[in-house]
Image 1 (tube, helix red, strand yellow):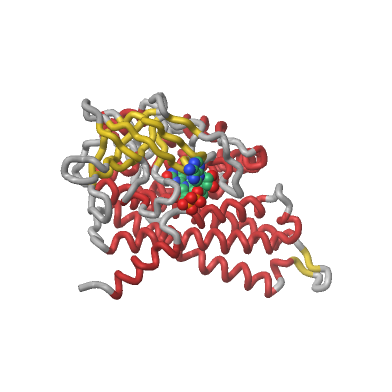
Image 2 (cartoon, protein in one colour):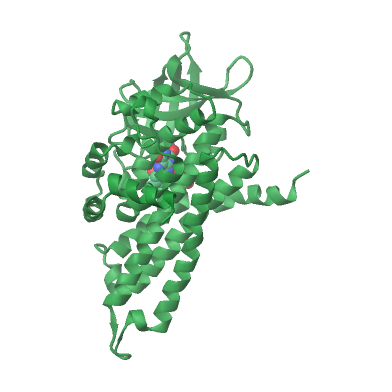
Amino acid sequence: MTDRETRHAELAKQYLPDELIERFRERAAVVDRENRFFDEDLVELRERGYLELFVPAEFGGPELSLHEVSRLQQRLAGAAPGTALGVNMHLMCTGVVAAMFARGDRSLAHVFEEAAAGEIFAFGISEPANDWVLQGSNTVAVRQLDGSYALTGTKIFTSLSPVWTRLITHGLDADAEGGPELVFGFVERSSPGITVSDHWDVLGMRASQSRATRLDGAVMRADRVARLIAPGRTPDLLTFAITSNFQLLVASVYAGVARRALDVAAAALHRRRSASRDASLAEVPEWRTRLADAHRKYLAVPAQIDAYARDFDELVDHGAGWPVRLVAARIAAGEAARRSAETALACTGGAGFDNGSEASRLFRDATAGLFHPPSTDASRPMFAAALLDQA
Ligand SMILES: Cc1cc2nc3c(=O)[nH]c(=O)nc-3n(C[C@H](O)[C@H](O)[C@H](O)COP(=O)(O)OP(=O)(O)OC[C@H]3O[C@@H](n4cnc5c(N)ncnc54)[C@H](O)[C@@H]3O)c2cc1C
């Protein structure tokens, strides 16, 4: 093993040892069936310091890199996809600040202090009918005399909704002096004007409890405003750090789902027998071919995530080449998860179709990958323009 792989193995043992992974996997079935939040997993992750992975040594954390956290998240997602997707949002917020620190911007140090003190960060960016995502907002931000903002709008799919205490969010100040500005920053759960929907009954990733959040004049304190950015394609370190962490960590979750689905498929082929051929399905060529194809297509995905995460950690400057790489990795991971999960479902046969089977749950969890932004359709113009519209 290389030094790097030895380190990944040590981190896996430290943060997600085999017995913990088995416990999470057993619980994932129960939590999914009962459609509830992963409370017990969160307690155990917290005890192990999992919520502080990105926190630098100077703030008392282990200062893991994006590459290292990505590997851990793949492992966690292989056991409990909803837990991994939920905790991803907290990790991403801290990863964003770590990325800014690495690039010389220490302005959001309070996030590390608060994460080390036990606060849980969520990501409240998605809004109904806002396909600008980070580059626009339908949430109204009104500047107050003391420099704080009052935010009014709806954020959808806020993962960790039962437990978050800090929300990174954004809104549009249309009346700013120099022209409209997007306001990015943090609101606290205790602020008046925050209502979390009690509706959550979805196909997959049920444990993430990603409910809608209503902001009615919710306060973003002046000292929690992170950035004021012109709407549209305005380059900024904060939004670059969000995009990088978001795309690669979400990709990691779906890569983990894909990997687990292949293992579930292989175990099922060993278990099942064909009476007509008097053989285990693991010996039947058609079944071997089906699994082989899914495996081959999966293998490109972790390699792509590894490469981009390492480049990101090493501050490689891909410039305008970053968004295509990041989005390609996340879309490929989502596709691999859906393809592998379908393979697992086929390989487990009718028994896999039972709602209690892991293959069935993985299949449902994998479908959530269809909804993370940007979608394949939304990203096509970017991929085309990178080749066709360069000066
Ligand atoms: C499992 C999962 C977890 C996610 N976690 C996050 C996250 O933590 N943070 C984040 O920013 N994004 C998150 N996303 C959101 C995702 O990335 C997309 O932005 C979102 O799915 C885009 O949906 P849409 O525009 O197609 O939504 P739409 O079809 O417009 O709406 C999707 C759902 O949002 C709710 N909704 C829509 N309008 C309203 C309204 N006015 N009031 C109340 N509820 C409304 C409804 O339940 C609706 O079914 C998550 C998505 C999934 C599938």
